[in-house]
Amino acid sequence: MGAIIGTALSLMLTVGGAAVAADGGPGAAQHYLAGHVLLGLGIGLLIATALRMVARVLVSRPAPPARETAVPASAVDIAPVTVLPVRTVSAVPLRGRHAA
Image 1 (cartoon, rainbow, N blue to C red):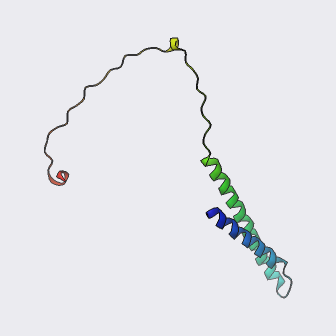
Image 2: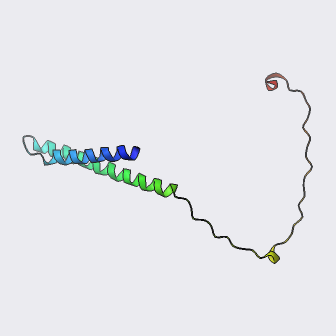
């Protein structure tokens, strides 16, 4: 939704700026400058919106699956695994704010 609103706003600023810049009449120099400012804002916002959309697509694209290299069974060494003993939970009654 933000991309649609950003695109609409940038196009409105661009077209409005071009219309104001093209308007001839009394005080045309002020309108010319204001039109080009609006035109620049519209084009800049359009470029920023397009870059944001492209970045969003690139970030959301899933990564290609990694190549799995098969390891021959003879190359795998068997290692012993040591399991530590499990500690028992202490039966100390809770007091104060920990009792809740």
